[in-house]
Amino acid sequence: MNSLSASFYNFKMDIVLKKFKIFVYIFILFLNFNNNSHAHMRGEFLSEEDAVNKSLELGCEGIHKNQDKWLPCKNEKELHRFLRK
Image (cartoon, rainbow, N blue to C red; front, side, top):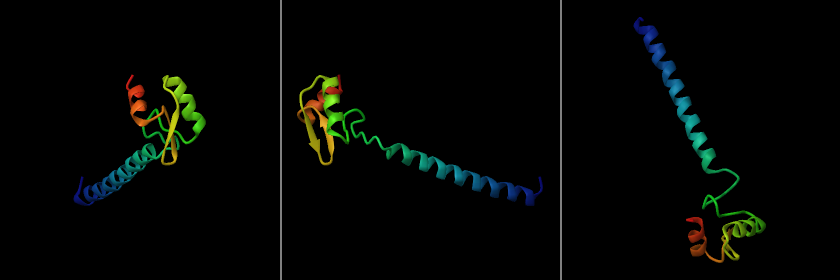
């Protein structure tokens, strides 16, 4: 391979690697900002009804609200206790 074709090859590889890095970055962002919005991965919901259903599933009593999200169980401490089971 002569020096011109080697430098062209390196240039192309740089572009490919940059595009790959951008793809990986966007993919990771997509995983972190999905529409399910589960901060506890199993215990934070957008609707009150979903929190009630999860509360029944976990076996705890009541639900509570944290900012704009609904959580099962009567408080956060109880929720964490039931999520660890």
